[in-house]
Amino acid sequence: MSGIFGIYSKRNCIEDLVWGTSYLQHRGQKYCGWAVANNGKMTYRTHAGKLREKINFAEAKEVDGKIGLGVVSSCDRQPVSEVSKFGEFFIAYDGNVISAKNLKEELLKNGHSFTGYYDPTFIPDNVLIGKVLALRGPVDGLEELSRRINGDYSIILLTKSGLIAARGWGRKPLILGKSDDSYVVASESCSFPNIGIEIERDVNPGEIVMIDNKGFTSLKQLDLSPIKYGTFEWIYTANASSKIDGVSVEEFRNKVGAKLAERYPAEADVVSEIPNSGIGYAIGYANKTGIPHQRIFVKYDYADRSFTQGTKEERDSEAKRKLIPIPEIIKGKRVIITDDSIVRGTQTKESHVPRLKEAGATEVHARIGCPLLQDKCPYGKTTKEKSEILAVKMGMTKDSDVEKFLGLDSVGFAKPEDLAEACGKPLENLCLHCWGLE
Ligand code: SF4
Image (tube, rainbow, N blue to C red):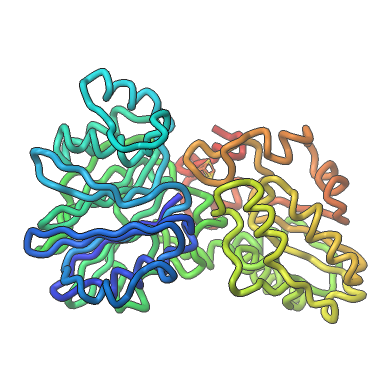
């Protein structure tokens, strides 16, 4: 998973580029990078680690660039460059090409080669995509890509004269914004307010947009049906301050929380959350019921997002260390705890519930912002292994199975129709693959 950011400015864009990309850090913490273009010259850097820790600000200030591209990623080094008869360009990409193996074999058969990869069996998706775009040109290449691949993506290309942004079937967000002197495109709108950018509109699924000194020009609208919005963006992935496909992430979570209160009432003394992604649901639940909302876990400020760690061990280790309980609030209370989802269930079983009970909670009721997961995500979110998913691993079919296994007094999951109602989109336009509903 990645966060991608592009800017076309009338002035040096470096500061806004670094900050705009940093506000997407929650989408990936393993690698970061940027590239800028000015008067036909292109400069770039990539690093392992987080952007604000790795960037050399003194060096960056020396870069005179008005067009820039930034990326943070949980799996591969970006941006990647490509040289073709259409010119040089850099690619920042958020997505997953499920058919990458076929695409690689097809490209090899047509005479392409991949030089410089230590592991020749693994060629990153964005390198494969770069080859298709180099062969056909950016716009025709993007159209061809949508016909040839199975998967989904959002992509930004930096050329010497501007940016080209494109979105696949809708699972990966991409939004346009502007100020008096800059045009911006980003994975999420949380990049915008603190660098003085206002939302213009989302890039439509299937749309290819040019961003240059004329502003935004829609170059093509591909007919990529069926449109499938990335439901998990609202549920967990996106920053709560973002607006995705016209829907405020925080309001979505509040609405689902209120729906959970309607569906699954419980006698309780306090409503709280697994921070941070459970917060919006707890507020919605508490506002609907009048049960006080209090913090019972504090998230260690310097923790990474456990989901965006590379390996299962890294994820479990990060998740275990990041929450600090507040026993004074928990002791003697009947607690309703909200969370965005239950994927593997490991932390709920081994850490959250036992720690609440140790701190003196008399009852623990869980309310979850989406149905119990049933499948892996083929598009690069949640988990890559179906066998890791709790419901699959334990053969769970009923909520009572989950309650028993996790040691909960009760559990309640939001229904698919609650998600559709909260985002105001038809159920058939939501990606529901990871709940086994496609
Ligand atoms: S399968 Fe689930 S996590 Fe993956 S894109 Fe679809 S809704 Fe999102």
